[in-house]
Length: 552
Image 1: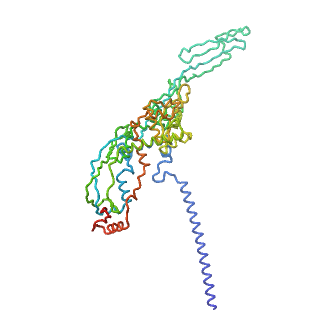
Image 2: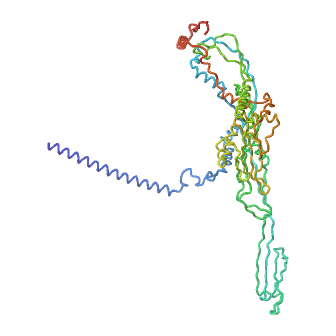
Image 3: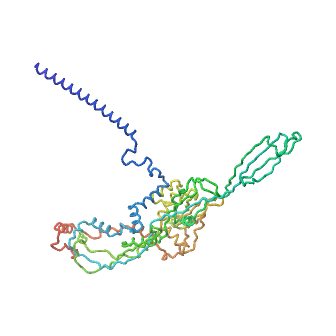
């Protein structure tokens, strides 16, 4: 028992000693680590950065980049590097393809496979076939990318110079009467104005040639007066396009800031001598491709029709439009054909009716007319007057569209009505009436406004635009637009057969819902089981189950 107690106490003492030793070692290690940290921090702060491998400068060129100069720096870098040249070349030569998920064969085939995955295995079936003719190749026009164009404002100054002069006075006493006369310096220097004093009764010894008792000399510097300070520019063409709604303000940057120039051999310093204004312009295009896409045509080629610099602003697109004809022949279709799980494999497709979309568009017109008539309105398809402003001095444009995050930032300081107008324009719901000067300063227009008539949907805008063109109804003046609706008697005089509704064909197809024909034919459980057995077997060893009348 004593031996056991002794062994226990010895073990306890050993453990305590070990713990104390470990704690001491930990403290020593911690102090060593802290000393290393302090020396490292001291070395980092005291070491010259020029000793660091790869060090160039504490102020690299990128440190001086600002928001106005970032674009120019990026452009210079693009022109200098091989990768930039490659991107520039591929961008300028890039073709434009528009893939419509609703009509493109790849998407449609994928949808068919998802709806009927068993049919993709290619089980042999008998089915009706179609005679497909060659696709009809049609061309259309589509707008390309917007292009940026620039112009400059240059400060022109004229000055008038009043020469400096020297004033000298001589005085012989307080009783002299001054006499002023101007003399020109014979050496060609600045003219001098002398103050001469005549004789005084109380100072008879004073003579003109010796009056130098009190002599003063004052030099007057020349005076420079600015007689003309005017900004001249070459922006008239771009401003006209902006008034027409084809361009919008992008940026205004001072390209010649805080410098001194010699005007009539005199130095003159200004905060800015030249501004560069950048406009983003969208060139007009007929945009006739939407009707072909809505009819199920597939794009096969793209050709640039018009360029501005390196940017293609208009494309000629080629579409292949399907042509099918229903056949009466029977045949066996091989692997890859859609398989009908019910055995009803007759193809019920038909040749597309090219007039269907136009008919649906015109029926939509009458539906909209009915809405206004039921509300008891004497004017149908009435629009709303919206206006936006442009500050020509600050280059602030509230008539921009909402497309793109950069443009949205430009509209941050605009009114809520102007932001709403931008959204309506993006949806093609507005007709631009015109632009007028809203404010002038010293005969110069510093603020402009553009007026629009906006409608509830694109269909109403098309009716108003094409109907007014037929009837000769004006949109009013830019400062007083006429957004009134059409009267019933005016609608009666419109020839709807002459209206082009192709712009809204895609919208009609997007809202069109295919009829549900799932319950048209009766499917029995026996027929389903029989055909499922064929799928599992992977081949057909016997004819499909027939109905009472011998049909599939």
